[in-house]
Amino acid sequence: MPVDEGTSLPDSLGVTDEMMACPLPRLPFVDPDNVPDELKEELAPLYDWSKRMWGTVPRFLQLLGNSPPTVEGWMLLDQKLRTNRLKTESDYIRLMELVIVKTAILTECNN
Image (cartoon, rainbow, N blue to C red; front, side, top):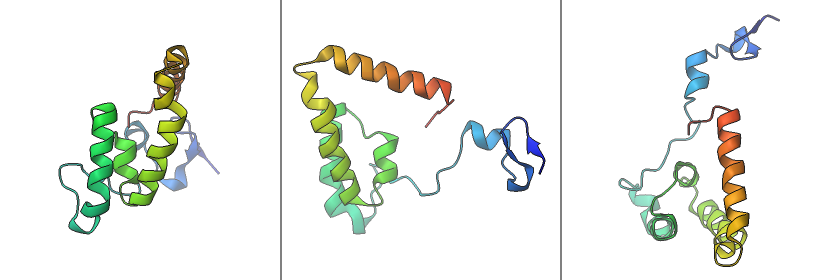
């Protein structure tokens, strides 16, 4: 099976370098400014929580926005693991953010 040297994937998959540079998600993002009516009741408070905590709604949460309980679970976990440590262990947070940025650079992730 021939492999595309640029993507390291079989040619038969049809994955191009352009797609790898900015892959389209399999699920649509739920835009904080345009939340569907069926999700608004559950999702709006979670997006507001994210805006208060981080000043924005990260694309990751917008992707999870298709399932509000998943957003809530992630926010609770994030708060316990990261946000609560901001008050007591700022060096831990700096190190963790460097790991996130380094990983994004190495994987050429732009989402």
